[in-house]
Image (cartoon, rainbow, N blue to C red; front, top):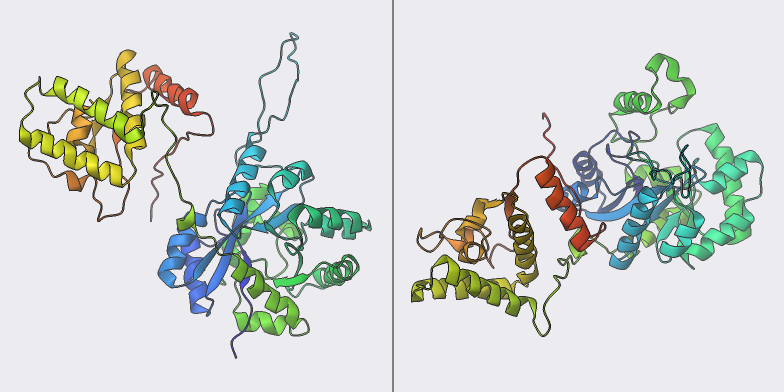
Length: 437
């Protein structure tokens, strides 16, 4: 008989040195153990989610998106995103917590306002007010040794009021107390208190497992923990987990661990079935380019393209060039990408107006539209270059226009222009990170 259990609490090696297994290995191991869905929730971020989505799809299992959130008292709550709106809210909440100014209104020694201080890289603190603003509809698991309820119980405080407030924040049917069993006597005592709290506050319980490694990575997990705590294996002592039970177990193993609580096991599948959101459902669209009155992105792109074409071809456009421009503009319109081309053109215009060297390169050079807009310097029509190498309806991929800029102050000026033009939350820095494999 197939178990109802679905793993909702796995962490990857990107989880603040608290996980020891890559998203790919977790997905492969989950498929090997017979799971058809699994959640990955890294600490204070969605670091492993994209790689886990790709690996889970390849392995034939369904990804569930989650995150472990650190509150301002350093306790933690674990949340899952059931749909796109809640995923957006989760991203906004994490971003706000990492962008919070820690010293608002602080004064420097000379009496002036001190420079803003932000959380250290990788750190995040979320207040209950932020939970109230963003968390309605997220599914919350509030068990585990680091949850605010557990910490109050360990201290001997009564968490009934906090549990009711959290239940109200997340909404009816979205707030659970999860019980974990890692063959730890202290944890079992805590579980009894959590179960009693759940009964008193009428909060549903669910079985979970604090997955930190795939099954053979315990020693690596200990090393990563020591790195995070800046200590050695010899001196870490009780800072390390007491056994190797925090590994991905099979559904049958988890059902056996919770054979006295079959409803808690079944609740894991109920939650998993509610979490339909996948990363492919994000529905991204490019920022809106500020248009002149009565123009659409497509109409304005057409105006700019033909204005640039008259300059590029010195008024001597032949029918072949016109056909190519119309062909490309038609594909851009059908794929709703005019806004992207306008944004790139806008950046190039800023660079040229400020005497910053800029040059488009790569497959964008195959585009007559890019040449007409001044983004690239190669006449794609004259050189008989294939536009579909750059952009094709059949490939289903977005175009990639690379702009080369000089290093130093000129490059920084262009970056700051993008931030001003599209907002600090509308632009981001990315990087290629090279690793040995």
